[in-house]
Image (cartoon, rainbow, N blue to C red):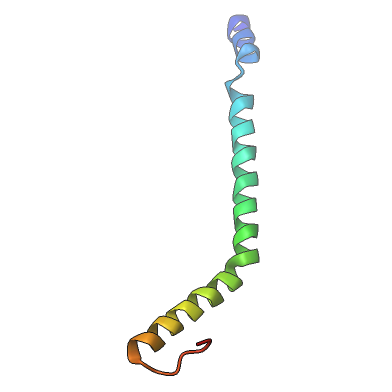
Length: 65
């Protein structure tokens, strides 16, 4: 029993796993915040590009030119 307890205290894989979990959570939160920050602007930009392509394809009066 003492030997298993010593081995448990010397094992460092648990804290390393916790460190990786914390890093993963931080990256996930950063990615979500970045998406929320640029999400609407990106959506509007892609919609504008799609509208312009549709306009060029149909030969209508395109905005900006």
